[in-house]
Image (tube, rainbow, N blue to C red; front, side, top):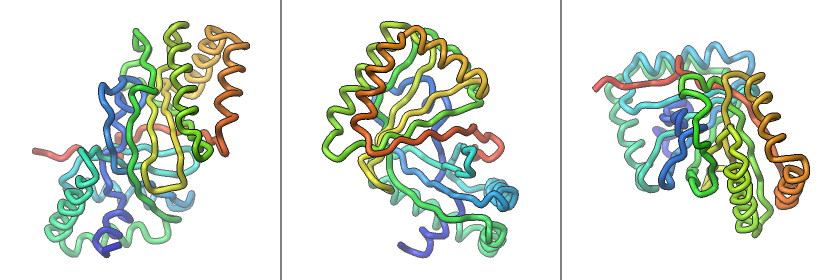
Length: 255
């Protein structure tokens, strides 16, 4: 890895994490590729890390980004790319920005010292055909203040069977008119695979879990158990993360 790319990633400037309406509510019409950065931050370093990200915004980094944090102190940054070659564009913008700000970059880096456990980056792709959007949206984008992510580590060679089960979940949700929508993604690089994940939202944790319970009743215990068991039978591991959008750490460059 080149030094400049390492600095870029460590500084958390991988840009544009899931636009909220695209991540948790409004289904995309076609598959979209994203380049993602993940930052694991120490609990004792949260304030330092966030101050450094805000400093990056002040220094007018040219690419837009949206930010999310999780309850277990992870931060995610992502931007859409047309293809894998789009990563070269990120590196180019990064190099030009670093040359422009000069020594100020060192102040940002110093501000993050001791705050970060590690970083990693990768590529994901949205899967609209395995996602569900209710006919009537329950929440406005600005009301989606709680996010639940489900990470499904699929058994090797079971990707088709897993996709088929997700399609059944979509069909069942459409039939029962459940209210919580979700968007599904597949990880294409950056961690252990096969890995799929989906994102759902609520006004708050209380609102999300209350609505989830209503949806479960609509589907019915027998059907939920059947689909749940068939899903888990295809996984080697399953994790849930919860978190929130961070508009205070997001960047909208001025034209």
